[in-house]
Image (cartoon, rainbow over all chains, first blue to last red; front, side):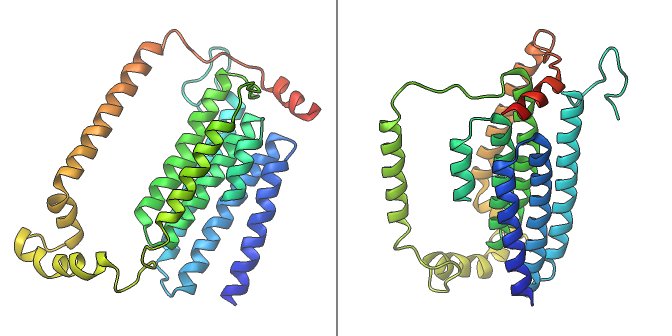
Length: 95
Length: 181
């Protein structure tokens, strides 16, 4: 069952990769990289159970955190074109 | 990974190149996890996929989004890369299998570390004694390199802070450009 699940995840990773390469708009690509991170951590978790090392689950959790923070940072960068202090005119930069 | 690398080379839209390099880092991190080098994988995932993607996006906001076509011939660099890659692959041919019990690294060194390091160094944790004592100079050199890099980056950023503020580029115009392509 784990092998079938990991095969399905690898297929999904390939599809996401195709979308990231072809993707016409930037939103496709941001979504693709986010999904790819999710698939990678799922694959790590399944590989942990497949090789009978369930502590890989904790590693997958940390991966999820990193992935989330990276996606938020990219989105924020695209909204405000910087990460640091707010602009002079709008005060939304520190959200 | 190879597919991602080729796409990174071929694509001219630099934003998708940045995104694909993030995906490449994630793939490399998964590979490191499968090789049970979890600490390296963490560094790769946070630095490679997180910080460096953001730094490259920040660079993109200052420069243009599309790569210029270069007119120079790429035959010499291509041949150098292909020859180097072939030599490296040839070098891996007689390496022992991953995790093989009769690999030279597993025969003498690991045995000695497991049996003697507690007596020689006096630290109960083997990994700590290897990093702090057997590889002491290595770790010291790494620390010096990182310290120098941090000083260099701080000097660069400190001088450029007031002059080179990234211009406020209209994002909507960029999106329209995307959709036209």
